Every structure is written in structure tokens, then in C-alpha cells.
Image (cartoon, rainbow, N blue to C red; front, side, top):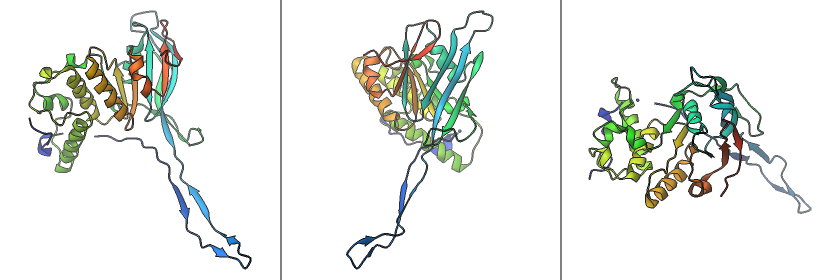
Length: 283
């Protein structure tokens, strides 16, 4: 087995993230004791830095496949705050996967908009909505191992990267991103020369996650991430998602509500008429 040591000279690719922070600074001030023993603090000040945050917003989105007359999705609106876990559930065929594909930019909505909105800590928008570009979204399909195309783990992860030559600084950055992605999903003990199809079901899911994480998305979408896995692999994937929740925003479609419930911050039910309703998980 070879550990994940990626030579930067062989890699190519880039991206930004949105961070939320809040800090309180207290400016020093001298304290004086009066003749009566009282404590005087004349200039003690507390300064608070605003903790702005972002939400991924879906507004009045409807979708009608080209050449048809019936909408699959109707007037869908919801908001998902950064670094939170959202879950969509509902019957098969209700349009859940179609919605994920629209958010990921794989299809365009017939009407409505998908964007990022920044807010002040008081909940008011502090800038114009920003279009959610597909490069800021990662998507892991149901049974992602069916879409593996390379002969080894390394080539599978970097398959979609740009092939132009880059400077040393860029190559080192990409090598670092690759190593971090593999470490974060527990693949650092897997040989980079290993055939992806020879991995166990759980490790195939880890690899699918690494493929997306190396692109450093701000929003990660997963369609039925636990489908087809044994109990141990399912537990491993749930633990991975729990860890990832602290680093980026997750939007998941799943029927496995009980196992994912402890991670969920917001949930919605997709009705068969393509309408999304906010609803607590029925577990």
C-alpha cells in the first residue's frame, strides 16, 4: 500500500469558499479606584464584528422537460444556510433528483432562480443575489461507482481537471487539495494505482466524495448516498457526512431518514405533483 503523497509536478486545476466568523474584541481600559473604594471604568468598550452569513436560495423554480406540457416541478422555494445539512425526502418519481440536477446546473429551470444571498447577522440581505455557478456545486449521484471511467484511483480523481500546464505554485496547490480530499474521506491508506472497481462498496463512495471535494465546492449535493451499502459502510458514510458538515453545505436526497436524522438541520418533503413543502422528518 502506498500512502497519499501526491507529486505536485503531475497535477493541474481552483476555487473560493464563503466563511462565517464572529469575533468580539475588548479594548483595554484603565480601572481606577475612587476614594470611596468604588471602581471606575470610564472608557471600557466592546466592539463586535458582524457575522455575515450566506444562504443558497431556490426561488419559485419550476421545470418542464423540453417537448412536454406537464411540469415536473412547480414553484419550489427554499433556503439553505451555509455549513448546514438539508434533506429532501418523498416518494420515488416525485422529482427529487430532477431538483438536484437543476441546482447543480446540469439542467436549466423553466422558470425561477437559483442563487446565493448574503445576509447580515440581523437577517437582512446586505448585497445583491449572486448567481450560483455550477463550478461552486459538487454532485454525487446515486450509485456513483457506475460512472467511474479510469483505471486507477488517481486518474479517477483528476479525470475532470484542466490539462493545461501550470506553474509550480499552481501544481503544489492542486497536490495539496488532492491530498486533503483523500485524507478527509479516509482514502489515505489506499494505493493510488488501485483499480476503483476493485474497492469495496464503502470505499467506492469515499472515492466518489473525494472526486467532488478536490474541486472545493461550497455546496455538495448527494443523491441517495447510503443506497446499496451494507450496515458498516452505511455507518462509515454517515460519519463522513457528519465531518463534512463542518466544512461545507450539504443537500441530500434520501429514503434513509432514520440514519441521517441526527445530521439534519432542515428537511422538506417532495410531493408527487412536484411541490416541495417544509416538513420535519417522520422518524
